[in-house]
Image (cartoon, rainbow, N blue to C red; front, side):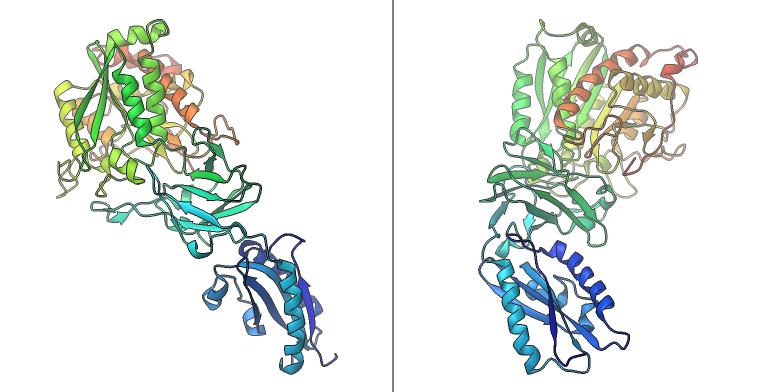
Length: 544
């Protein structure tokens, strides 16, 4: 009722700052205070006061009543604050019939000094962000004021434009953050997470981090905000350098180490199927001497690094020294010849792409023509062209295409229900393989998958469909999660490289169980036990 302004400060705790993320909570509280303090006659009019700045510079801003309802840090109306830490938020209340003239200006100076003191001069630690290395992908948004207090804002770079799908894919990220921030809780935000290829995948996702690039853990303080399109996580680093990624990376150097291990095995040989558009080798490992031909390819989509971790586990078991090799594998090597491609897309892997090769081709849409779009071609998809050419020469009796799925929190098999030759035989083979896999490794399950294609509606440009139709054989896509695996949840590590490797090793159990029936002339499907029966899966969701 007095003709004067009163100031109410909402100050942070001593030694802390109010970041842009938490300021909205304080602003909401301020609005509720206004509603409680304003008399019935509406004599008090609110003003929002903000102090913001960098570690050494402070700015003061007062916002009139008309703007209080829509005020948001970082909005177009407040670009001066969009890249600065907020060190104080307050509320000014006064008679609505008075304009904030000299009296208000004098008192606002006092309020400004109070808010300035709340922020101090410390708390903001410069952080350097880079992805200029093998498989890296990120761009720092607030590079001119990238501090642990403000929050490190980054965005994912696009894959090259995909001619067939008419879009730029993106979702894979991998970057390094460095600074004197050991022991300081720091916030990171991917500000274009809402514009990625599969934004529906973010619920329940957790970013992985590492200090040595060998052991990867899950950042459990990962949150997805659909309204802003931001994926945000907080971490108190235990070192001054930390790496973050969508899933544990599998670099080209790791790939070369894997190929070298296979080349040194006395029971394997490494062949080069051809060269990529960047001139890299398309490596294939051949092992075994049996008449049945089993092909396993990995990482058509380069950002699905789970696939090459899987390949490593498969090859380690298959090529184990004789004194360590288990009897199942020894018998299988006499039944089958394995053709294993650990990385179908080395160019995309090195460049940090999610789904495409060097020029933007999605290899898993290049296994056949799509209307007037001819595929595969040497100009656009040599990786598929050379692989399919060799498959035609060698033949194929069983085929597995190993991937990672952004959305579903399961390991699962996507089958061949939509091909024209689908019938009791292929259904029986798929049931045998999938059921025995789930028995061999409880991280595999049979109930959830993609919704199967309708009869005769399979897209033959997709790899496993093309192979099933082309060779009339068991041909499936195997998918692994980026997030935790709900069949055996482990929040601290989630789905991890070690579990990928074990799932890869278990493939041999499922293949050994299925091998006797692959080219059987008998109606074996009529006598299969219930445990091996085909189960038609239902569509999974991002949260289960």
